[in-house]
Image (cartoon, rainbow, N blue to C red; front, side, top):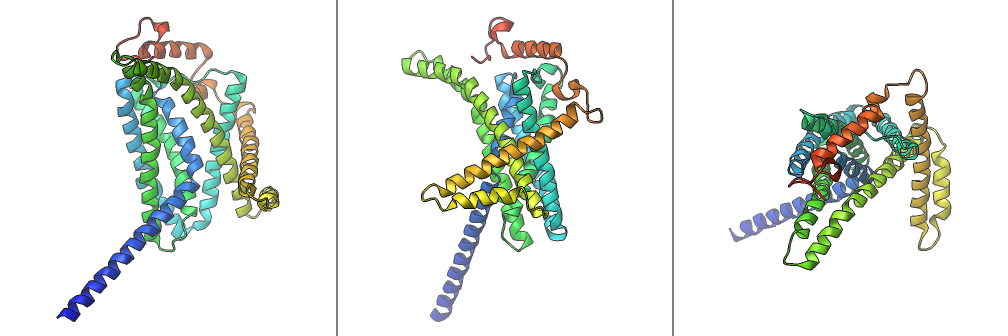
Length: 346
């Protein structure tokens, strides 16, 4: 009996070690897959705060939560099953799908740079559009998230070494949940930081809190601007890298071969070789994405078969933008709209 109990305990211990090893494998695979998609994650986190611009502060987190739920649906209900089926029956289709996303990211990044250098008015916040604005915000954000989520999931899929379909599925579920919580948790913190600053600035018991709160309120617009620039660069960097690697995977030796050769040339430099290689790859990816994205932008805006109504892309004429921005200013309680309301941000 004692021998049988000892054998049973040994078996239980062995199973426990196997389960722990499997958990470690899933965690390691998930971390590896998620890190490969980090450029798109940064882009996703940088894009999302624009959707709550101009809203009442009390509606920001509820809308972010609605977008978060939409992102979960995108990744787990729509994208994950399709990716698993493609990986099992048509793995050759993953690279072209990934490259389509790379084209989109490059185009969006080039568009943002064009708007920045040309001084074109930005689209007015959906919050200025009247009734149903929240639904429009959520719908627009979830559509954008669908594309970015597809990129994240495909990049993650390509980074998974597991042969088993179930193992790939588990890793992708972990990546989907973890990245979604990371992105929208960070967005939630970002959009509420100025509210935290306002609360601290109103604390009459601590002069330090008041100064820190006022500084936080003043700094957040600059932080959000920096994040928007990071998102713009990330779009071009990630999109260009996807296109560079994709052309190589489809059988074209160049231009990725030239970039890879430069990476190899600096790889042996002691101490900084790896960093220099990464910088070279990133710089060429950015330039490649900018070139390809710029070509698509020209087609979409200036050639007859690609021309579209400016209002369809940029939300209307400059006058409409100014009117929309005026409405947004009123809803946010800005100085232009008179005295700030009780929920207005500084």
